[in-house]
Image (cartoon, rainbow, N blue to C red; front, top):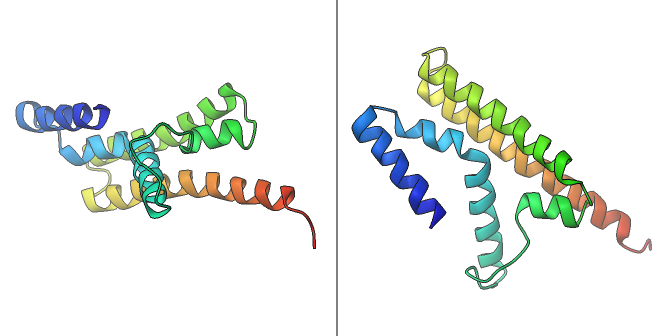
Length: 130
C-alpha cells in the first residue's frame, strides 16, 4: 500500500506540479532500495514475500548488529541527506538528470552494501573457527 501511495504522489507531482518523477525516486531511494533488495532476496530463497519478517536493512542493523535506534536513525538520515542534495542539484541544474540518477543509485547501493558488510562481519565473528 505504501509503495502505491508514494507512486501516486509521484504521478500527481509530475502531472499537476511539473515535478520530475525521477526526483521522487531519488528522494525515496533508501526505502526503495531496501524494499526491492529485501523482496528479491526473500523471493530467491523461496520465502513468502507477503509474510511478516524482520529482514529489512534497518531491522538487521537493530537485531543483528544491536545498533540503538538513534544510531540507525542517523545512518538512514545521512544517506537521505545525500539523496536530498542530489535531488536538489538535479532540480537546480547543477547536475544533469542522468548523472543525478547514477549518483543516487550509487548512494543507495552503498547504503545497502554497508549493511551487508556489517552483517557478513558479524556472521564471520560468530561462526566457529576451523
